[in-house]
Length: 472
Image 1 (tube, rainbow, N blue to C red):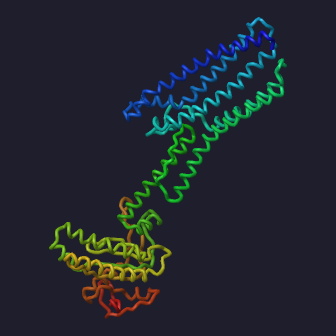
Image 2 (spheres, one colour):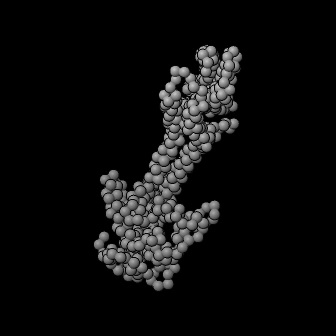
Image 3 (spheres, rainbow, N blue to C red):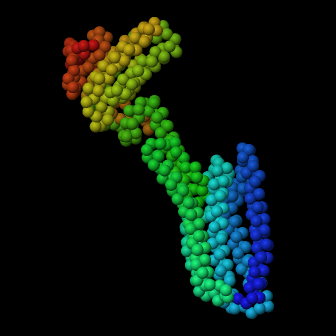
């Protein structure tokens, strides 16, 4: 480049920078200040009209594009200004300069524009998104054009690879310049290219790696049973949709878990697990199970002398202790509360064994628990509670009955009816626990039992053999 052209080039650099940079900064400051009123109102938790808020949100999402446009226009116009300035300098220009200069501006401009885009995107997502999208998802905003992951990768490839290599290739075709060592200048350009490439890789890598890491950590927490996780990142690109759907999925899982716990509290945890594990429709399967009926003796007469509140309190006190004795200690399932008693089932799970032993163990736990409860009642000056327990083992239909709109998980069959009749025999035989011969025969662990005379039972042709504990 001739000395005159070189001087014109330096002058143009100074003048253009004095014009372009203030203009670009002024436009950028105007864009940022346009967000300030909404920013201040949101900080004060003031309500903003939805249409007005959406306009500001769209401007925020497009902020990186605005910054890239300012940078790109400045470089594009700069290339034209420099060509016109050099062409009108009154000195002969090499034809090589007419294509070398625009390409150099294009390479430098693309790198600068890419850096601007990703820096603005990172800053806005870090500093502004949490406030402007506090109760909304950026990816759900209509009328936005976020950068896609594919375009993100393309911009990185061009900025980090194509542009630096292009710069080095331009040096091969650059006209020789006095006082300049081509090798040293090439090394300098290479170092600059590497620095910008690494910076681009850092920005783009972070924009991809951070949401992936957050999602992976949250997914691991969910697999370990923690449903209180939430990925706080707010993005307008594909990651925003992915994060939003993940958070929605966890919310639904949390709601389903709450419903399951509420459901289990009403029908029993064991019953809830069985209902959820079986065919959701009506019907059932025949299984051999053990059924237990427990009844509070003379509850009707007792409750006649109690207020409704105290009668319910008596029942709740009794049932609270019995539920743990049946379900917590012996693997049973309380299927029904029957006003002054309950029906418990053992062996409902398809692979359950030893259900007769579980039922007998539960009956003994109930008796021990009741003894402790009665001691507490006596200390309060209240009458003790007396109960009767009846247990029977045999086949029954286990499943859901009712209508598609209202179903109940239960068991039906003669085994259930006989268990209820055996419980009622406690009054006749002055006992508190009776089991059938079928239950005794199903015991896998021997127990000290005492046979009682066979008893006639309604609905059964032959008298039923019953047994009670030899030691109570």
